Image (cartoon, rainbow, N blue to C red):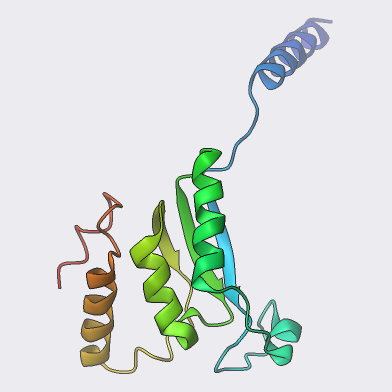
Length: 142
């Protein structure tokens, strides 16, 4: 009986809590393109990759990010396909985004040498990567 009483109390507290709070995501992941330079058999979106559809323009992504900001979402990540296939779009989005970029999912193909890594991260930093996000600058000392 005591167990049932505690379970009922817990249920009532959970029900009350859930009725007062609505879960709201803090971040969103955007698949900016389905174009990729690899064809990994373990890829979760391989069928889309094989179609090779372009995805979003920089203007469309900025519009999406602005809408996200208006509803309280403060962070985003970019994935695809391979975001670095459309490097110009990637840099443009980073430069004009109204919210913080927290992650770029990449297959790493373009980062073949330490020199390329330094150059690419330097260019991304010039575009604004890490400037709004308080956690990134600490490790982005280029």
